[in-house]
Image (cartoon, rainbow, N blue to C red; front, side):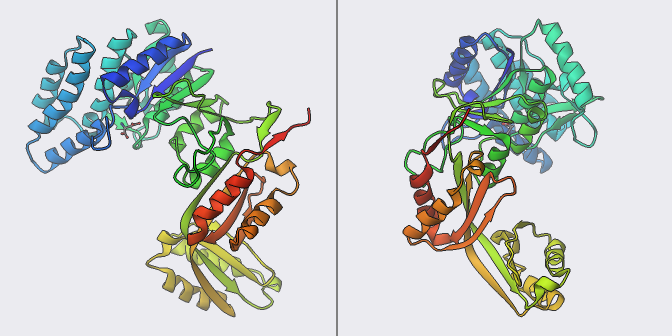
Length: 444
Ligand code: ASP
């Protein structure tokens, strides 16, 4: 099986991390394709090379001398090269950049973080270097040209004898103009490579052991999620449990290549496998994970006999559309509905929105409920189990937590409860304690 192994910034931050990457790559002969981010932070106070390069651009833009900044960047790479005894000629390359600084585009300069990191990694691993500018092809509008990219990547596989190191995060248009993905976009490069060469697995090496069933700042030592579907992952990421760049998922999801999140600092840990379906295992957890966010606002609209009228909800929604506010949930009653929105999106406009609703919907009352926290309990196994939501509500009730809102996603993979901000952490703990480790045994 071909594996694409993508290493994030912290996994390639210094020589010690490079050593870990090497032992990971050498531990599995299937790991033939390596994608790297630019060196990231070595510790909390450090800077990512990409951020320093963005700063170089700002210096150029405002005509401020950036020689010492470039020297700092060069030194980061020199430290790695020196410690690992690499011969790549960093000095000449940096001189070339310094000499032509004003001629390079801002994208070109930022892309050098990945370029240098991949150059050094290629020498260190003894694997050929392939420049993303030659194989990852962008349209001029900044979107990826998958057809050309696939052809180029497959050619690169043949030319290199079936193994190489590729810098992430950038590519180029057919006329050679460097283009960048958005921040964190090295994950996208890895996914595109995996797809274009029909990899069996896309490994994404980072500094955490995948997804946890709950936020460790709230729940003490939550269990890791070993298997998750793309759909479940979207639900959890949306609610803040984010490990992977959202856009990185689509190239591999479409062709059903699984992604495994792994920890460079703890490679023995299983991490998380994300795939389209995950039902081949007889014993699975009832709940895959719990995630949530605070500071939503509920707008509660009530109007007698609304159930006999058409268009009330539409009018209310079109007001929010006008204000550019996206809607999270719309729980409805017979003569009422609530619209739940992100508090931040309406912090300056809520009074105008309510006034517009008074005018256009003519309700009997509108109440605004701020400080709402939403908790999403996610699990592909919940739909076949009667009583899950009953138990969630029961557990919260026993703990004295008032539920302000309830919704369930249409495919029944998540149950969302709204509680007051101040009950948020307690509610997550209560649900985790009731379900965190519960297992369902499937009938075969
Ligand atoms: N180096 C880029 C960034 O810091 C891309 C990446 O790390 O994936 O955003």
